Length: 369
Image 1: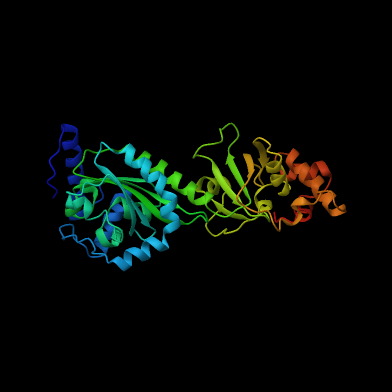
Image 2: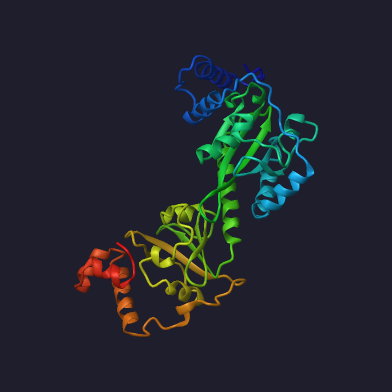
């Protein structure tokens, strides 16, 4: 089906393996145990749409108005990605791979070099406005990453259409500050040697873009999170942006995973996440305290480093400037929170130590069990 000339015996064996899988799945309708299940699922979706592997693939012609609209509507993502695209260009300078950034529908919104201008198969796809979704061009790293919501590596004949068998590509979805998929990052080469390590590079690069998107959210407080024993200060940190009233206005994927936040939880409050007085996070930031372990309502603990956003505002921060002991109810709530913290987030143990019921702990703190 594909006629790319392998450069080594190992490459020849790899392409032969892919060809056998294609015959099994696409011609005989039988699953192939030797190829990734997500690739087979994508092939099957293409077949279900009535597509044939031998079809001619035509990449969209895009007008200037469409390009302007795409650029304007995706400007925050493009700006967040720009530093990472520059780094990728350096990392891939000697490989003949280049970077493509798409929106959540698989439409190209910007491209990072190096793109060979004399290679029409590269310039055909490295254009703002081209639809590279699975519906438009079959199985690609772009369509697969958006469909499977996981990083992928795709080599030559693993693309659905024969005409796309010159491409090799790695892709990773991009998660926005509200926990939804906002696009994907793709690294593609034409008639190049297979480089599975690019899956790691694209995953790491996607994380950097996500962090930049999160930090761009207007916020009063930034929380850096990691599990106890792990270092803080790199792209692997969970990032949580908090407004002056304690609501989470942005978080990266790592923070969503650590705090078990779902896409539907748009603006959770810090007091719904941490089993402590949420205003203490602002106190820690003002005092520039080092990272400290903090309890979650789940009973788990996270390292938390709180810092004020120098460009943000704490106007309207409600009770942040008030004493936590201003009034009997505040004293009572503070004591209960201290007991929960001393019990390392175990509400039942805290209730037992205070001589009250677990339900009372939740009621006094205004939380639901």
